[in-house]
Image (tube, rainbow, N blue to C red; front, top):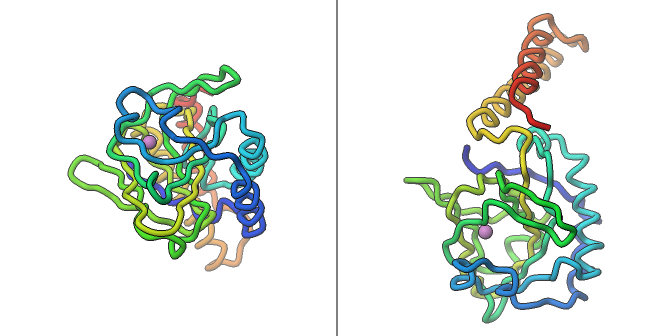
Amino acid sequence: MSAMHIPQVLIPQEIVLIREILDNADWQCGKATAGQQSIQVKHNQQLEENNPNAEQARDIIMQALGRHPLFFTTALPKKIFPPMFNRYTAQQNYFGNHIDNAVRTSRLGMWVRTDLSATLFLCSPDEYKGGELVIEDNLNSSSVKLEAGDMVLYPATHVHRVEPVTSGCRTASFFWIESMVQNIQQRQLLLDMDLAINSLKRKMQDSCNNQEDSQEIIRLTGCYHNLLRMWAQP
Ligand code: NI
């Protein structure tokens, strides 16, 4: 599975609100929450998990995730680690190559197996230079820098880094998802199938002007759900 772009997770009013909340927050050195290996390459700022501003901003993001169908079908989320926030600016401006820990424990004692990593961009690309999220995928690497409110989901098994921010400030939310379908190939197959069925549905509706699904679409949708039933561990 490659990285997946999830556009417009947040609406413009939510972006404005979250940024206001985060601008007034008490930012800490990111090393405080780094693992043994990543502490050597982590140079950013972060909000502590129990920071009240982070809690406010997190609620907005959790609500937004709950209403986004593409997020749901891509991640098939079982558990979402409470979203956290980081900032890259001035001297604390990059995060070198690292791999995220396989299991994360939140402050509330919640365990999440990190099947997917998420970065939700909160600044628009023209507000800072550099700051690309680079995801290494064997021979390929993808460089990601998205509009404010957009999110990238990628397998947490991939080495990744954030390139130095050479001017401006890059603020983002990041978190992890444990999926109902742990196997990445099964999850990819379900996603492809779901996207294809939905696109076929729209095509049929447009061309036949018929709101009722065809027998074939009903059976394909049944196959999707029966595969999900077979593979999901909710
Ligand atoms: Ni990471």
